[in-house]
Length: 245
Image (cartoon, rainbow, N blue to C red):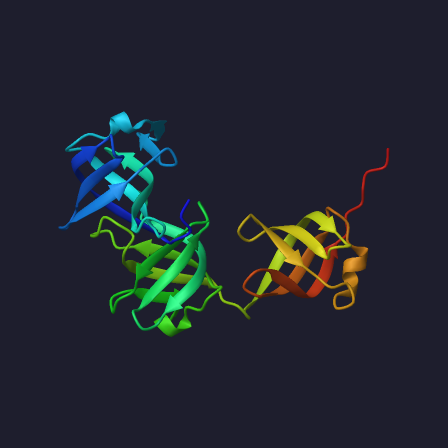
C-alpha cells in the first residue's frame, strides 16, 4: 500500500474501465477525480465486502484515496458503494502541523492511516472546556475531530477537541489489570471513563510500585509524553488480597 496520507472523497461514478482498473468519480461539489483500483482495494456495499462488479456508472461512492508516488496517480484504498456519508468524526494523534497552509495530519485510531485536513476561521478548537487556537494543536497531541457536515469528505474540520498534549498531566484512578515490573509497565482500568490505559513507571521514582500486584486499586498522576503516559506519583488506595483456599 502507498504510505501517503488518505483523503476521503464522495461522488458519483461517471465512467469505469474494468480492463484497466480505472474509474472517474464526479465529486460532490464539482470536479472529476481519476481513480485507480486493483486487488489491494477493498470494496464494500452495505458493510459487506464485494467485488469490482459492484462498481457501475451512476453509483454513488465514497472512496478512501491515496497518492501513489510510484505511478503518480490516485489509488483507491477502500470504496463504499451506494452508502450515505461515513461518520464525520475521528479520534487519533496529530503527526504533522502545517502552519503555512493551516493543515493538520491525523493518524486515525481505527485504521492507523494518516488523514490530512484543513482548519479555517470557523473551526472551533478547545482543550476540554477551555477555548483554544490553531497554535495549541501540537504534533503528538491526542484529539477528537468533527468534520464539516456540509462537505461530503474529511477535508475540513469543524471542531477539534484536544484530549492530551505532550507535557500535560493527568490523574488516573482505578484497578491494575496488568503488571510487568521488569519493563515498568502497568495497565489500569480508569474508573472515570471506564477505559484501559497503559502507564509506564520507574520504580525508583515511584517506590509504591514495588508493592503493586494485579487487582490493586491505585491513584496515579502521569504525564503524557506524546507516545506514552509516565507515572509521576503512584499511591495504592486499596491493596488486593487474594482469597484463601
